Image (tube, rainbow, N blue to C red; front, side):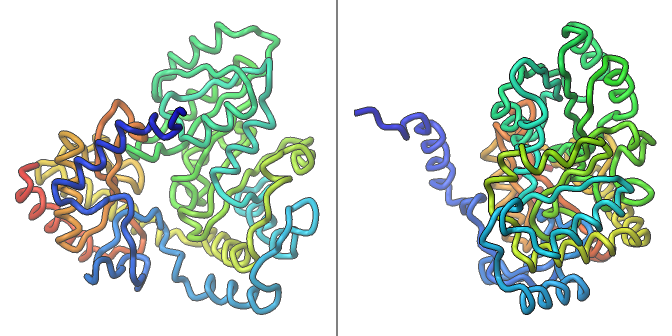
Length: 399
C-alpha cells in the first residue's frame, strides 16, 4: 500500500535534523500570555513581539474590545450559518458599511478569512478560458484561487512592469483577463510599482485586483494602501484585504465599484458555503476600521519605527530584503536555514520574537527572519530590539 505521507519525507527529515541541533521548533511556538500588542510571555519569559502583523496595534484598543463584548452579550458566540442563509447579522452589514466608507467604494463583501477572500473572488471572476496574470511571488491564497477557478495562469517576474506588459501582449485580445497584484509583498516587505502596472494592464483591456493585506491601515494618506499612495485606487477593479493585519481581528474582504458586484454573494462558493464570522469578531472589526480612518499620528509613528529599525539593522551589518524601509515588514536575510533557525532561537532567548521564514514560502529559496513592526512599539523598544539583534547576531556569527 502506498503511504500518502511519503511525499513529505524530505521535509520530515529536514525538520528532525533541525530539532536535533537543540533548536526549539520555530513553527509551534506558544504564547502563554499576551500582555499588549508588543509584549507576550513565551516559554515563561516576557518577550517583545516583532512578528505578529499587528501593524496598528488594534488588538488591545479599548473601543474595539468594548464593541466585541457588547456583540457577544447581544448576539451570542457564533452565527452557525452561511452569509446567504442565516449567517448575516446586523454586525456584518455594519462591518461592510465601515469598509465602504473607509475605501470610498460602492460595494464590500466580508469573508471568514483573508485567504478565503482571495480564494473566492479570484476563482469566481476568472474561470476556464480566462487568463490570470500574476506576479511570480504572489501569496499562496492567490495561487490557490487561480487553481480553483481553472483559469490559465500566466506568471511574470517579480515587480517587473516590462515583463507584465510582454505577457499581456501575447494573450488573445478578446480573452477575459485578470491581473492580480499585491501592494506590499509579505516576505521581503517590498512595494509594487502599481501605477505603471495598472497602466499597462488597462491598455491591454484587463481587469485589476490588488491585494492590500499588508498595506491597509498605514500606507496612503487615508490608510487605503499602496494604490492610494500611488494615486491609482480609482483604476483598481477589486481590492482584497484582511482583518488579521492592521484591523487586528480575523476575516477577509473585497471592495469594488463594479456595478454587477453584488451577484458575487450568490455565485462565490467560498462565501456561500462557509459559516460567517462570529458577532464579536465583526463588531471588533467594524470598530477598528472606523478608528483606522483617523489614525494619521499612529501611521506616522509606525513609519518612524520602520525607518529606524531598517537603518539600525543595516548599520549593524545585517543583510536586508529592501534597500530602504518600504513598509512595516523588514526582512533580515540569513545565510541558510540552519543559521536562520539558530539566529531565531538566539533572539527568542534574548526575549525577542520574529518570524523564521523558509522555502517554499520565501522568494528565490532564501531563509529570512521577518520583522513586523507595530505602531504601539515605542522608540525605546525599537532601540532595545536593535541591541537584542546585535547580541544574537554576534553570538551566532551572522555579524
